[in-house]
Length: 196
Ligand SMILES: Cc1cc2nc3c(=O)[nH]c(=O)nc-3n(C[C@H](O)[C@H](O)[C@H](O)COP(=O)(O)O)c2cc1C
Image (cartoon, helix red, strand yellow):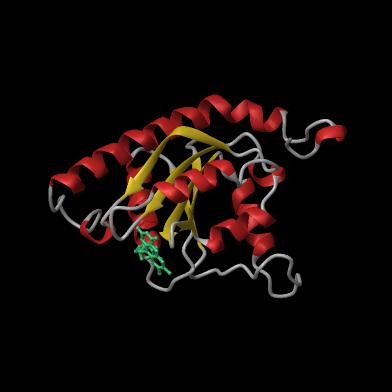
């Protein structure tokens, strides 16, 4: 059975570059033998938590996250921050969806940025849901110049494409190695249901 990966495209901007990067990465994951599913927060916006359950797409998204063995979390850098849309998703998502699943972080920048959202997601997002970020991550800089259809446009494009393939191969290996853990540890002991 092939590994199922959910890619979260974490920009809520229509025609976001993050959505385009998600499509590119999903294509490469399929090439590596994985099944993919893209949750695009631009086309499926989640209301700011807490929100009414009527017309809230969360339950559908939760089921899709639960079905995944690993996750790719893509966030643009906006004003030196991770996108609020993706942080909002982490207010909804908990251990039932994500505990002990490996995740590859991807930051997207229109310029030379991208380090801040990586640091932000690593320090706040995983604590209660127990998502396991890989030590490896990707920063897609000058995003409009790379990962476009066709052959690599330049040396930077070639490098980020090769690096993305390698990081996603690693993600698939982690997914296989950690699969027994998320089954075994989905519910922590009653006294520490939340992380410390
Ligand atoms: C409100 C806003 C703030 C931004 N701030 C930054 C920034 O601080 N650093 C940076 O590298 N890029 C910044 N950008 C550019 C984004 O990185 C760029 O739009 C890129 O395409 C990723 O965003 P997207 O996925 O929404 O398209 C900003 C873009 C927006 C819309």
